[in-house]
Amino acid sequence: MSEGFAEVVVGDDSTIVAVEASGPWSSLPWTSLVGRLLPEVIVGGDAPLSPLLRGESALLTLGLELDLGDPPVPVIAELRRIGGHVLARLEPRSAAADEVSTERMAEHRLEEIGVLVSGIAHDFNNVLSAILGNAELLAEELDDVLAADPDLAAAVADIATAADRSRDLIAQMLGYGTRAPRSQQGAIDLSALTREMARLLRVSIPQSVTFSFVIDDAVPLVVGDASQLRQVIMNLIVNAADAIGDDVGGIALRTGTLFADRALLSAGHAGPDVVEGDYVFVEVEDSGCGMDEATLARIFDAFFTTKKKGRGLGLAGVRAIVEAHRGALLVHSTPGIGTIFRVLLPAEGSLARSSSSSGSLAFVHLEGVRVMVVDDEPMIRRVTARLLQSRGAAVTCATDGHEALELLVDDPSAFECVLLNVSMPYVSGIDVAEEMLGLRPDLPVLLISGYSVEEIQRRVSDLPIRGILQKPFTSSDLYEAVRGLLPRRP
Image 1 (cartoon, rainbow, N blue to C red):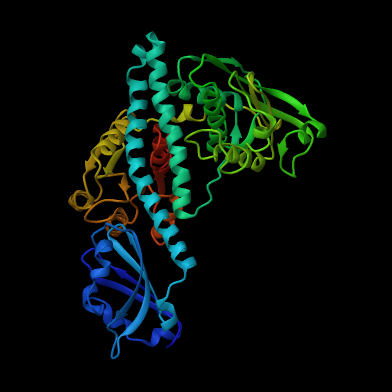
Image 2 (cartoon, rainbow, N blue to C red):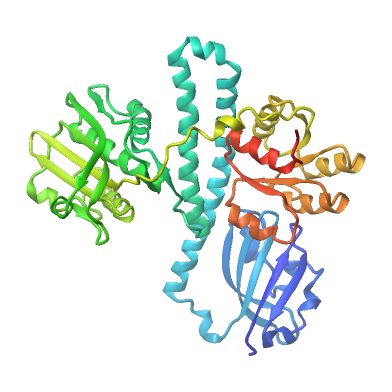
């Protein structure tokens, strides 16, 4: 059989809408498939594809025979559901290909898990958007009430902080699902990070365990991935609480700076590229059961654990993250007395501390700006509209793409910009954007999605989209994105 491959696009009504073939295989009559229903071109019917067509599965790999002449053409089909469409990549199938190797099955299984993770992350991002947006609205609209009640103000701040941290975790899930780079390097204040994680974990740790702090708020900044470093601090605090168990005890958290010479670094666990110099440290000390020498020698081994329900991956992950940040990890433990973990990360003295960049964005004025918000999720629609209205924008909402197109057809000049959700029923946001830009090529369109930005950029590379805003977004993210769509005003 000739070699090559073909890519097929199937619409939401099972109609084949496009076929593109390459290589010698392109000589087959692929164009004859366009406009036909998928069940008609598969010998034996589409029963194996039913879970994919019904939306119950996101990825399938099957051996099929296509009606492309006599005899039918055997193919290996990799089919992926994206929104309302199914994308299929077809390759020639030889007799040997009927037996799929264990390695290939495992690879496709991982891909299917990745697609599933992306779907879960997308849905969770919708929920987080509503939580984060409403928490920020509460903080702003109840400013006088919160100023008189510090505890209530702290509770509202914790809601926003927890949602923001969840956003980082979901970003890691999306990175896994799309095989995109997950590390986001930036300047980090370890003292602020330590306080934040201790506050969030306080509610999940027994009240018999007390916290004490010796925090240096003037430590230099470090460069790293904030979500990964939060994971390090979280694991160390949780392990410290587990070491104390049901007993009365305490956890001491300390931050500061020190000069680490070669002897100190050699005494700990560090990667080969660690050098002498100034380091910022985070120290977690507990008054728990402690560890003997035999246990200490194995605590960083994968799958080693002393917990009944532990998986043994926490400290192995901590060590990997610290080494990836060119840092070192020191441990000291005495049975019956307790354990001290000290994380060292290189100090970046050249990084200047800056005030919050969101301050200027929080007071963005959008008086009279006519905005259309299109989202099928009522919570997202409401909170997005309220945030924009709080800055003076005139907001019109649409529940789906059909309603949005009707509004634009009625008066093409009625809106200065459109905020458009990508994943919607009936017709996708990308298709709606294409129709809108056909009606008004100058219309600024901002796509909003719970999927990764890289994936959306790939799908709209041929459209003049002005920007992409990923869920969950903060009010500052929203104001900045909308301001970027508009001509500069006095």
